Length: 343
Image 1 (cartoon, one colour):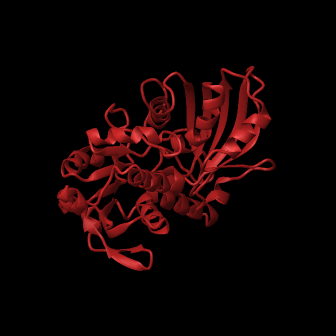
Image 2 (tube, helix red, strand yellow):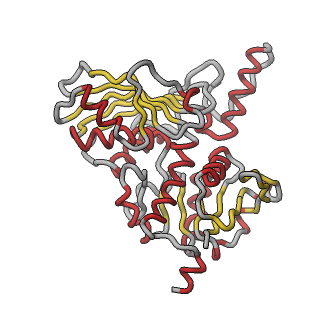
């Protein structure tokens, strides 16, 4: 017996990737229900070699649905998540609304699988931010051995971070430059993104950080270690898909380059390059987090510097969410609704 699964918003970039990964990994599904805003209701969307008709999220009854992958805005998540959870449907949510709730776990399966049992309190699991996920995949195995004190990270984030609107804006503005047309007014971003970089991802807080940068800090504290000091600078770059991060880490204990490489080579979901480096373009549709340019940070006694890249729509979003669902099955924490009702 398989599961009945809902995906919302199935028409956005993360939603479409969720459907792709769900199919690729042969998750035990009897029925997949793509959901979206009312204006998209009735359109057809691909799921493997089939076309599925999209239903309206605000009219959907979750009472017979086992699992919902939710990739919507923070405002909409705040509105619909309590209703979905109360229906008995388990939610894997991509928003930042619930990441500070002590009763709701943030999960990266390779990093903190043991925390997943806490979801039973609210029936909600949070998929962390894409930049947090790829950073944690590398920090966790190093922290286990040498204990991290401090992290300085600059993220170079693709426009798919802002969904289809962001990718469309980059395409249109780039076209304007090439054809000397009047520039398309920026709507998805604070400034023009074509042939530019923007040191702002999300809104500014009173402390000078953006909410995206602060989210990295709070998520790493909750998932890995609240004692780690972290300063992040998040930058938007004119790349469609794939995030890069320049990372400097200070450790409590000494760690050699050879030891660090050995640790990361044995870390699940991490691929180490001994020569050269990978770029965001090269990791599109890849599942791993790629680490390169591993070297000593000469500003501290026990420090490393490195460069990491990842497909933010896959491991940074859809793949991690599907892996969370697989972890629920592996731990026997999720059953099809019909089987649960018979217990």
